[in-house]
Length: 190
Image 1 (tube, rainbow, N blue to C red):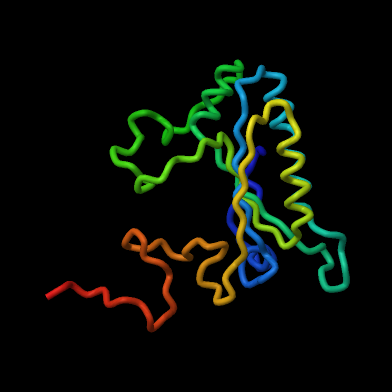
Image 2 (image 1 turned 45 degrees about the vertical axis):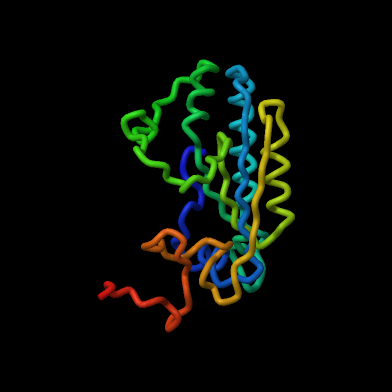
């Protein structure tokens, strides 16, 4: 995972995987790892790297898709606790600036909802459930992994909320992406 592989769609074939495709399913896969030794953690990270490569690999070329069609994308997020576990295993990595105590928010970001216990979060968008299953199996198949959670969902038919998440960040907490012409008046009260 030297580079982010497919975090943002930037070409038309990338966008077809994530948007305007009713067959696309989004998976949020949370993985908790134990404080294993360096060899075990490195081996797991290498297996995750291979699993990501297999997930985002194009299908075989066809007449319609000479380069092969993309059927999946993935974004990987690492929690602060993951960096602590790497350090405890003797793997020295620079901690991102946003994970410092000084950068921690003064208020609860999640409105009272519990934070995820996952050390690593994978966001997978795929048009083939079998690819997502193979990825999940590869990521979870290690003694380093102590827990796996998964949430999944499909894009709404009106394309307003891919996988149940608002397309645009709402200005007010709890406000959803309403269809045009049905949005509440945003003026100031008299």
